Picture: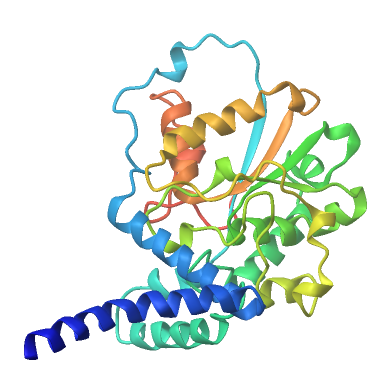
Length: 314
């Protein structure tokens, strides 16, 4: 009898998680909050898989030197790195005595957000400092006097340009805030490209946006645009998500996305644009420069801050 009881206990313990998941799935059909929780659990599972098994940083050891490639066509690409994210705030400021407090605050906020489509860690949004940095980018675009400002501003006689962004919120929000006045003035949209998704194993590199949709902006990001809730912000007005094909796969390749982005730039659909403004991520850009600039190049884009590009740098 004792053996039978042990077997029954093992079966019961094994069934409890399955029953809980089934109940959550049924509940998600009727309650949006439960649907959000189920989706978050899916992303966390995928994120855990990336941290353990991702091949995203496995790049070819040998590639052609760009100096040896015969030029057939050219475009000007202006890369814009995202501002500080909530993930950067927690993990990129050292692990001294104030780290437990930063992590604790983030975990408490994550718990409050778990039944929503917002998150601190998954597809990490901009921090408050990050939104301030994006505001600074907006001021630079509006009032700067560099050779690129008329192009960034959207002056017709500066050449035609198209604005694109990674499908991760920290890049998309930086781009939206920075180019906000231009977007409203010209009525153009930001093209969200999954090919610009960051090269990383971390869960902050998992996009909350489902395929062909944009992610929900966080409260601080919306406040920087003078919106008070996600329902007030018309994402369809500002984002073209027809080429956001969803999250990268665990066995994906960052190099493949670099090539896909280059192919997109030179696709005939973009023939009218000589200039592409691309908002994205430090590691992605660094790999881009390493593989698509001549190996002997000393271009300023190879200069880094602690191994990364300066936030909001162009």
